[in-house]
Image (cartoon, rainbow, N blue to C red):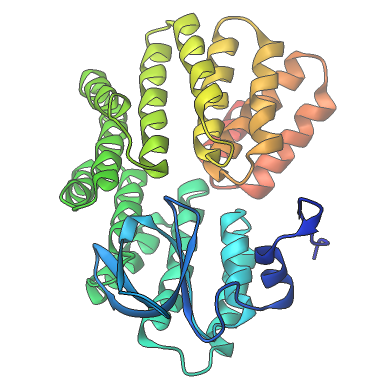
Length: 358
């Protein structure tokens, strides 16, 4: 196991980092803790209710608070073992095999878990496997079927719509566009405005996969023009603009696309790794198509060096780097990128493409 690197905040370790190191919950002792995406803040107390639309927590002091399900970044459960927190950290960092090991360990170590904690113990490994399949597909149908079984059994879980989104993406990976659209339509029916934006985004991506560029552009434009009311919606607006840049790229309007991508990179928050990874990928594509291989290589290197946790984008960047390093007379670096692509993502479409061109 590689040594853990600890990040200093203001010269000291943050409380959250100490919590991971020492295995202690960062919230109040003897309580559940909900972390919100919109504020980054935590609320400790007793979780008293959960539906697919919201989760309710009763703080130690004060009235119950209902939090939209899509605003729940994570829940730390009273008495959960340290392996559960490590599993979340590994999953967030794209270390999926280690995440699965830690989740399995947490399940074996959990003592009398509450019913809602048991739901997380069941769901998290399924979510990890789905994310593995989306980056490195081997059996997306099996991962999707497991999620469908979970969703049917846990229709009141706050994970319901996240699960639905993953199911739609896996159907898309299976090229079952009609079933993918049905999943995204269900997202569109959610109460939360950010989920409605996500549904439009996913439907736009589906339209691109179906070669319906006109419909895709219209949907991307609708998302890009939305007035975001929170950080998650802001990220979706950026992704809508990314979709428009992709349309420009497909129309070979490379300079206009590059200008749009530069604006997105300047506006995106540092923690929005997906937006930045996709922007640098598209930037690399446009620069490569414009006959500027050195600049394209630098764009793809951003994904490799800074955003490798975004697995699907990382695999694509490694493919392009393997070709560009060869073109720029650095075959040993190209071979390294090719080897990493084939070993880390053996089933990725980019590995298949690399094997077909070598």
